[in-house]
Amino acid sequence: LEQLVDVFEGRGRATVKALLGRAQWLKGDKLEAKERFNEAVADDPMHFEHHGARGEFRYAMAEDDKSALIDLDFAIREGPRDHPHASTWLETRALLLRRMGNDAEASRDASLLVKQEPDRLSARMLLAMLLERAGDTVEALNQYDTVIEKLDAPEREQGRPDISALVQHAGEDARARKLLRTEVHLKRAV
Image 1: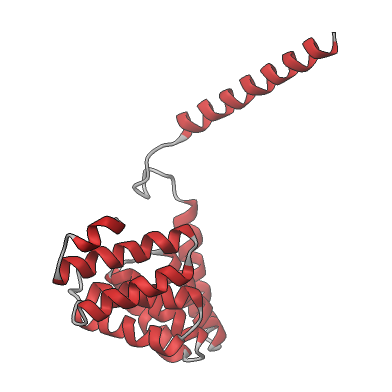
Image 2 (image 1 turned 90 degrees about the horizontal axis):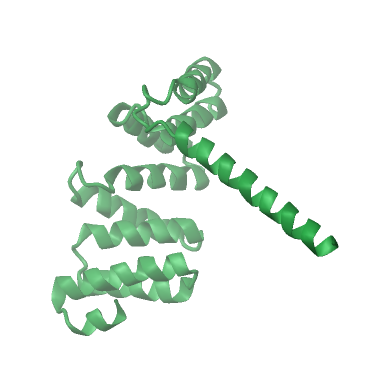
């Protein structure tokens, strides 16, 4: 990716820098990631995705909550509601607002997200915690109950693939490796 930075110009160059920022972040190089996200926004300041990525990064690093909020607000305001990252930005914003002590606004964001995506359990859990903290224990318990119901629902109802065969195969594989180790230890002992 690093070599692609010089190949592109304008928006393409900024996008490559934002991708490099994510890659550096995943690699654990926070300083390089921060620099790349900042460069991406500087190269294309009106591109909402770069602000969203930098806002997520700033939230995760807990370095500059006010700047993270500005980036996330920009991404949410300027980006289309059906963008693949829109829900993540809204949820990150709610978590950030909670961390900043603005529970009322965090609750509004979490509630909106639960309305938009009723199966997004992380948002529902956040809403339940915020409701509980605000003293609305009845509604908080309703939200917790919904999370538990969805977690206890059979996998086919949740739209997840049935992984029982995979689990069984992994168990058989583990047993086979244990048997092989036992054989090796016995041979060494003899």
